[in-house]
Length: 157
Image 1 (tube, rainbow, N blue to C red):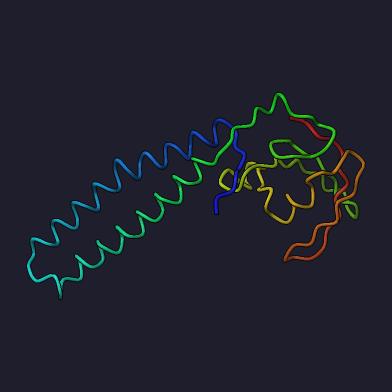
Image 2 (cartoon, one colour):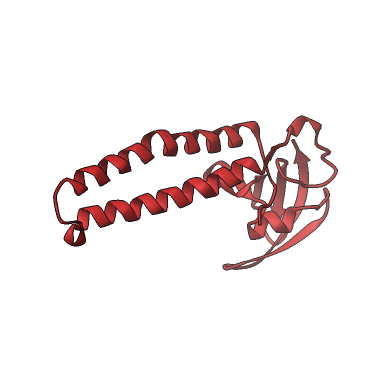
């Protein structure tokens, strides 16, 4: 069952580029490996052949999955988003209630998440805890490290 996921133009373009690379570079490379291994003789005892066939199966599964994701992807224009509440593609500035730590998180689709640049998945515990919150709301977020409370300071596009 496919689900719709929302991406920025950049995020969708990266997915499409990855899919293109898998089809035009990785797939022919694996086919070449299979052909070379096949030329070495008896296939029943040819470990290179079996490994290449397994790699091919894994690649084809990844291609099929990514094709489904791209087919069901929808691009959101952040310029048309309401910033009254925290939604996907909003940047949410928060402050730890029990501390002084302030941080900004941009809520993105899972495939666009990059914690080093402050982009967190809406499916992550923090992302889910912030979704739908307004400025002034306190989000109580349970993570593997424990429970943290964040006050929403600002929401921007």
